[in-house]
Amino acid sequence: MDVLADVLDRVRFGGTLLFHFELGHPWSLQLPKRPYALFHYLSKGAATLALAQGEDLHISAGDFVVITSGEQHLLYSDRLTKPFPLMDLERPPGRLGVVRHGGNSEPTATMICGNFTVSQPLRSSVLEFLPPVLVLRPPTNGEGLDAILKRMVSESASVRPGQDIALSRLTEVLFVEVLRSWITSLRPGEGGWLGAMGDPHIGPALQLIHERPERPWTLQELGNRVGLGRSAFSARFTKLVGQPMQRYLIARRMAEAAFLLGSSDEAIARIASRVGYETSAAFSKLFHRHYGLSPGRYRATRHKTDSEI
Image (cartoon, rainbow, N blue to C red; front, top):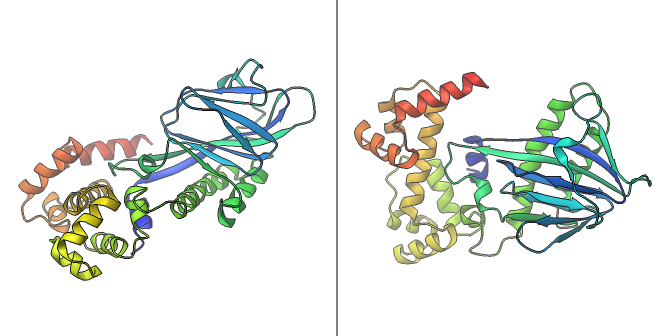
């Protein structure tokens, strides 16, 4: 069981490439707060990123930055240049293609910007574990990430048939590569369950939970499976994952139930059984506590959302 693939398969994640810039010095762009993560890849030149809180971040060619909270920020080559609101920029014919901005000199920077989205039903979405500002610099980017970013730069340079679909798919793969690159940089105890996947004891335990969430797992049984005593396993799981095993198991069951409610017409009693509960009443009570909606109401809400997309 690939735990990351299992989680991503049960959430709606995606992304969109918004701009491909060629920027002549001096330039300054103001990006508004958005309800999703924003990313920037500087393929040429240098720039500074400034948030409302924290120190300015200097980025150069090859750097990839994710503003995970979608916080308002500035990107500029000259701090004295008046920021230009991103939403006021004129796009070329068609949604994509190169947007030229800044001074009249030859482009000194080339940059693509876009977003990542992760929607429910998973309460603790993967984006919540990322730092507020994630910076991946070469060569730590990894070959996969670097190759995808370069392909996105070339794909977005001019309007082509099927461009939206190609860039949408590339952005989804980019999201997975970003997570992979970030996970490899983590130290023990960082990144919640994402970081714990690589632990020789807790990683296999997470796989077992994801393979059989309906099983009445105990600390003793899981500890025995991965070669640890009950107390040692409990302490290690809580330290690395950031929550006790039983709480993680319940969250995993609720995520699976939410996925089934939104993607199938199975009876609620059947779904309750599939995620480890003998009665619909016990399952419904816990589901309502977790998501704030009854299973039936949650299903109706998801189906309504799907019909509006």
